[in-house]
Amino acid sequence: MMEDEDIALNSVLGLELNRVFFAVRETANKQKIIEFARKVLQSEHAEAAENVSPEGPAS
Image (cartoon, rainbow, N blue to C red; front, top):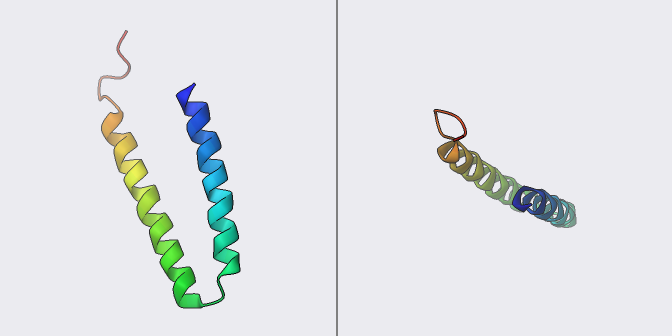
């Protein structure tokens, strides 16, 4: 299933982002990582909302 693959990929990416975040020492760079992650999450939520049909799933 595509959903399972997306969940697995997001988990791996989240772990990698977490590793990079804690490897970075400068607070300013950590803030950039946080802002980047926030933008990605917001765009994914917006994309998911666009894909939801107001009538619900087609039968």
